[in-house]
Image (cartoon, rainbow, N blue to C red; front, side, top):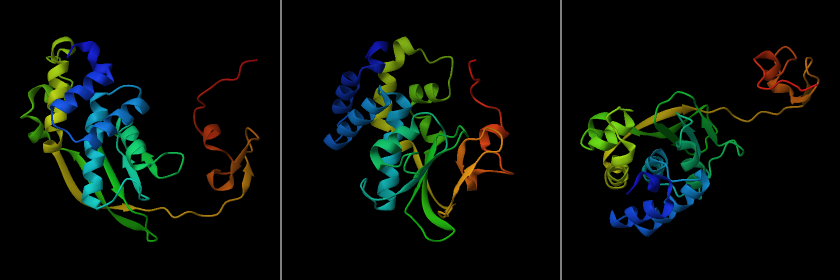
Length: 212
């Protein structure tokens, strides 16, 4: 596989078939790659992580589930496509912790819920040298010459590198709210998101400046 094939879905799907992956996994790789816009290595790893979490929960992709991604990179897209946990339906939280891990759980009416956390085991990754070098951002990883082996190792060995732990996650129950108005910008905001009458963007650094 050339470096160009890294962003070529057909090339990655071909490697997936050669790796003996099931038709359902290959279809999932295709759907996730289209959503993500290309089959990134982290996305492929995320697909196996979501599949493992579902298996540990004994859940199906169509079941109502909640998820946490501990990094912004790749994992949120695998969760959105496979498990339908999205930011918009309020069933996905994305943390900017930089840890390549996910947690999934069923709904709960309690203050916490039993969940499954899936993450990568560093020691197990070491048996996949190219995969490990890429993951560790090792300068010895050469994208031009090692991309094909990287994808081979991910498709064939990622599942052996996964670690699972049972955890409990805190659950915030939905509460009612009324329309409020920010005292600073004057825009409408749910009143439970106002602090001292001020919305989050006015309290913190705004992400845009108006053009006169």
